[in-house]
Length: 135
Length: 109
Image 1 (cartoon, rainbow over the protein chains, first blue to last red):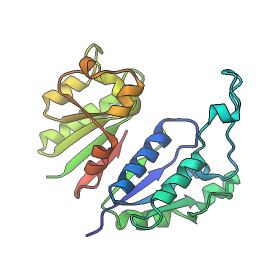
Image 2: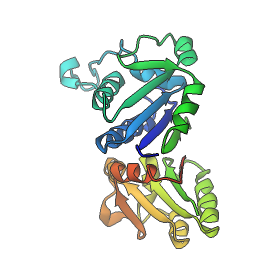
Image 3: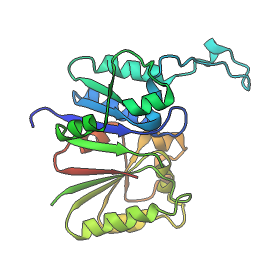
């Protein structure tokens, strides 16, 4: 296997545990090193890329939307897809059944639909696979 | 010989199953495998020297490489001066380097 390729399975929904942030950091670091990355988003993680996410104000701090500059996970996914547009390549696959369950089909551009078979294929073609499960 | 990479994300003072890492990592090391434990997220809370009942000294005594994510340490206010001996401050780039080595089994906990 000449090309270095990392497959990461993620399962956590956005805005809950630190796992999503860590996954984003690993994906970004790998792409910056020239490593191709496959992401298989399963269960709640399919919502990370929902296009309809909107930043919000923070009434506790008294900040408006612009001042709060609240980061959305869709923006992180967008940035990662831009970073991994070609070489190295980031392939992001959302579990289709998980998407349908959640009505989360309106994803940012570049996110694909697939199933566990795609995860197996990704793992087989990769240098290594990391599964980040829910706790 | 294989290389095992445990990525410990759990606070050992919250999760009793931190023993999973201790038992599994030391058993693998005793069988001659190369073992690294990478502390990340709340797993980094165990890195403080003054943390009582930490499982990290036993891992270090077994010859297991202990690394801690700098980002996670900073978030939790753990400074280099506070860290227990035997733990090396590391970063996410080093974790990726470990992950993309061949014959490495990565286990997230």
